Image (cartoon, rainbow, N blue to C red):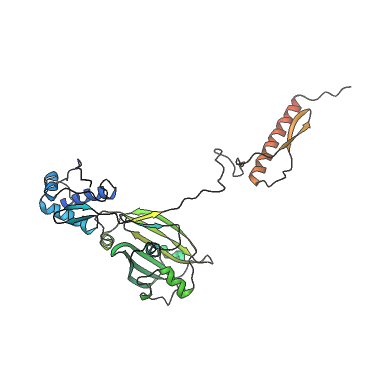
Length: 326
């Protein structure tokens, strides 16, 4: 079992932040960034007291906060040990939502509807193109621990008969499909880190001044019409966004520098064959009609080169006219 190594980062008694918050933040940061991996034995309360120059009550408050967050396990006679990581993964490029993906891993997922009302379309909800929207706020938990707060706006009157009870402990997309025949098939997503207010931190049981992961976007049905707009705040210490990366079968050619037209040559295959043509006693080239398919960019680039060669040949012919024998 790995043991804790003290770091040269003492608690600052002159800081406006309470001492127990400083100590818990110090330990939390090392747990989250894996400096203290699962199974690490933390120092005793007396050792933490002595090392950081704080009282026993400060140490106990700090360790209590970490225990409440599930970051450490405390047991009589065995000290405090860093808990196994509670990480939940979500493939953000997949249309199935958070509850469906996490439920597929076999864990218990619950959803509590916090608010449910019809409102005028404002802010992000105007993307739905309807004067009124159904605004829903839900808290999603995994194994009893809050993981995400979800604000959703649905187009009206599309879902006018939907009830809050129908969304309790289930997937919104599943209800839309079963009740209205609405299939969510596409959408746009964006992810960012953001600060959280005290109310949000309390709902997600997160420490003060902790950022959250925000996923927001719009979902479309099979006809391309917007069905929902949503913003979801995730517990940053427990949520991991995964993205599958695939090889692009037809990569764009590298840039040729400033001023280059979009009709740049396709460098992924050789240029089409050319045959020489005589003009004014000078050798010039002219394209042979290609036998296979050729992109517009390749053909435009070839024609541009041929025009340049032709201009050079004409200029050369004017400088050195061919003498006709008398």
